[in-house]
Image (tube, rainbow, N blue to C red; front, side, top):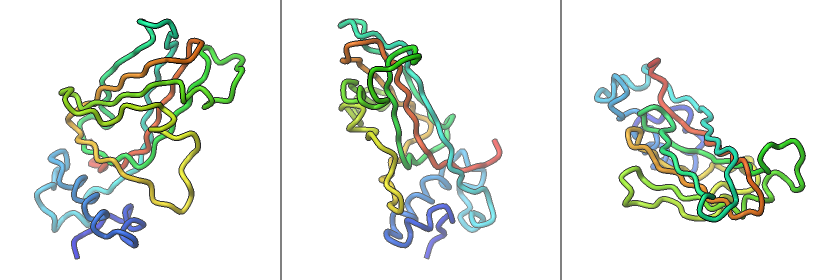
Length: 179
């Protein structure tokens, strides 16, 4: 059996092929100094889970100006595996709110494209892509393999009735090479 990083043992119990693919995706990345030496992987760098966030503040609600786009590179050029996502949408300013933090998430359109623009990964409401509650315990989340050197273009569109702040968060697995 091929080496499976200890951080993916939970996946190995139900889907060993996925656990091996996750390990290979991170360890075979040229950002890893021993990417071409699988015999050294068990002794080499380890997988770490890190949180990455992106904030879109003061997104207007006026049609024609209610869209913000930006390129996102979650891990600075390293391959990553997105393990979970979370999003919060609230009225801009946040001093007082008239709704729960995620009540407005179904009014925010989220589009994610691979940087060269020809592949749309998601084009749906924030609540459909990121959910409205944290992950269910004891269930391995669906994985999303991100190619590290290719940013994704994220566009959010505010279809709510007020200006909003949007906070997106990803839990990602990356290889910790000390660089």
